[in-house]
Length: 178
Image (cartoon, rainbow, N blue to C red; front, side, top):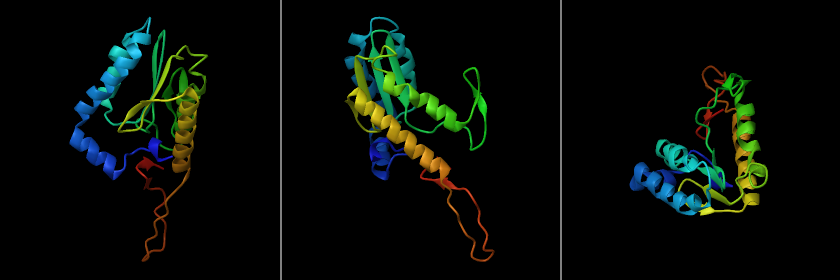
């Protein structure tokens, strides 16, 4: 599905430029706050501090957002900050590759409703619009996003120089470093 693909399309980029990142962040945050804050009984700062800051620092980046009595969980749907192919970086209590980090970030989504106490509200921001979705749809979006990113990471674009007839190997594919 195109609605979980990042970077944004030309039309989305134009809309973001027109709308302005700061205005978008405030608009999205106010929509989230209106729906989520009344449902949170503890750890309000998940929403009012952490999610608000993330939205300000990442305008237009697609995400899934979950709310429960004990706070929120935001799952970003882009590839910012992932290590390069084959590289291991410090992650949680050890090291991980980009594929392991991706899997770790998305593996919680299917259990958000029951296991992680975020079962009151699921929201999805596709880069232009925030909307309430079912938990089943959230899991589907996360799975589709994971498959698209892995497919892009695993593909290589071969560019041939007709004079030298040799490949330049990997290149950026669809805005995501392959």
